[in-house]
Length: 296
Ligand code: GUN
Figure 1 (cartoon, protein in one colour):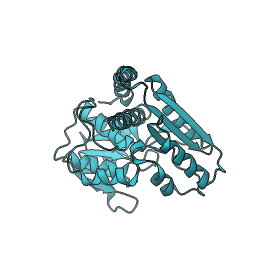
Figure 2: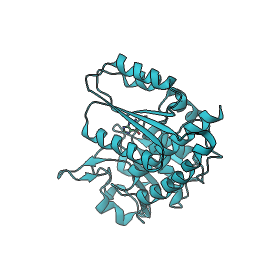
Figure 3: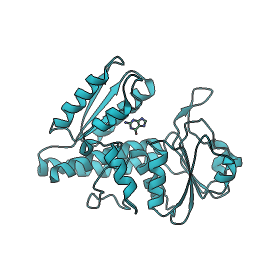
């Protein structure tokens, strides 16, 4: 089965639009997301545009701040400080990567943790690692949301797996990649679902033997068509987090979809898989940040 992240994302976004429409009556306004892009990386420009459009489509307020690549770290930190203070702003996202002369760590540390809709603030990261059980709810009500923010891409992957009816309990999940954005938080969310998790990376030996023993493979290494059919056992579930360009410049994932798909019980495509779910979870995180702020 090919699981459409796009369809699931559209369903969740229309539910969110209905919910957002009820907010002005209760709170006097809608959630407000501010996205900051430093520099002119073409892929980042597309992601940022899509985030702004998604926010507007579900009826939220969205602001995009585009800064020159020459922006200094001090200028960016001053902007973040002013947005932290601004009571009309619920979510702040700085699109990564930032230019080399700016410290990514300082930037992520500077965003108020209650407005950190990416879940990249050290306190949000720490909260994820100290909670032992599932944090991604099985339904999409805001009554049982977690008290802190979960990173969008791993959260979206778990939602896709659950929507596809994939049992995670006791399964061997192999995560390819150990980034702070995807690989590490993904592994923790899978552990919380009681999967047995192996994290693989560029230094892993006998990688194909490990992936062949997987019930579930999450590919998040950023190498086009890296996961090939000889690395996948029949019946496996494969989630492709990669967004790459192939030799012909066509969008492709970390999975060689054409050869791997026939083997899988469930597989997510690129495009139309994880990408739309990441954006949807960002919208959800912004609503959650708004609700938590309103509750204070
Ligand atoms: N760059 C690639 N993925 C992400 C993400 O999820 N959030 C941010 N802020 N930047 C990214």
